[in-house]
Length: 536
Image (cartoon, rainbow, N blue to C red):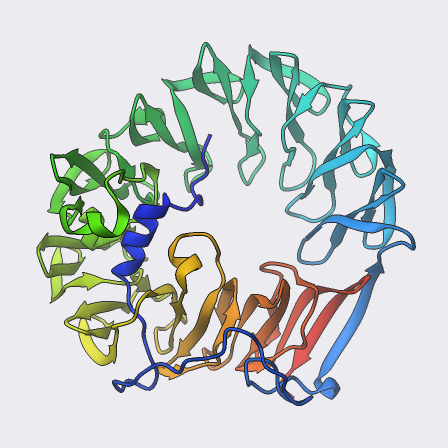
């Protein structure tokens, strides 16, 4: 079973990246600086990126807890207000919640999970080769040979886990085995209200969705991703039937495709749309045909570039399209991912032929480009959109379908990975990435990365990821997290000012406390900290 976030196959991944540009700063054509791959020593007021460091007088560190003497960290998970971690000592594992042990001593611990109200925590624990579900430190199941990740309803009143004894698998909800028996089972999930539960069971090599203890929808050869519809009553599943993929919405499959993009719902939840691609292999070239699907029916068709021919010298003769749910690139796949604006206009990019890729808003085309090289971002109020297009050797920033500043784009391997607008569309940010040979081959995430904020380039980081970019409410302040900023250590950037380096910054833990203060959770040596940084 594959995940929606899984990367493409290497050849296709590189093919897509080669179509995506490097952007530079200030809206003028200029070369990007060649930053060092290895951080160089800096003074105490400057980080390895060359950015200023937050002065200690404007930083407050609150101790959440410490790893016990003689123990080592074996895993951790943070919620907005709490932190749980697993310690290993003497071959045994224990769980700490905000510094206090919960539960007993185990041979192994997996899948720390908080309820959405943060009042409950669950995990599975192993004793003498058997697994048990633990909720708030107490056992809440009998022992099983195999368990999936557990799930909790938003208020923590219901807890569920998939369990197996040999090849006899059933769902357990609040300590009771329910539903049909299967040969294999997936992790379950509750909707927001906790009144519906979904999981998948495997029987005779076919996967079957179970909704509220009843088998639902068609039998599938595989599935990769699922979620509830916006009203919490329906379901959406990325499903495989033989070699083809489609979205199954409320039990009904859509058209059969090789690749399917992200599925989006209209604001009232009554309509849905997604892009997809069919591949046709020939003697020397594989053609790609992109389609837009609305409410289960094909609503538009576009011609992708495909691969083979001129690409074979670069990739060799054994290319295959990466199938299943993927991020779509319009030049290659024929269409981009499809989305609804807040006022229910359909937005996507489509390719009409060589050098002719266009963004459509409610069927109205914008300017033509050789490719659209970023995602299309729509402001929170739905009044503005932005993206980046490729034309000749330049890359053009486009707002509200009007081309703006152009940037040089001829680099060995450079592309846009993140793009964001604030709520009213007055501020725009995007990430530019320059990768080396190992990055090009899909062997590492490490590359030279920087954010461009309103046309001004920020510091460049030799890092694994720039993540969780957010504008403040007014759009004049922002933050993002830098993973692998120095070796495997992390930091947070707030308005272009670097935090000190931490062993770990907990992913997506950063938030605005107010317009000039942020908070995040980090590990510094054996200490877990809640860190506040203030611009005042």
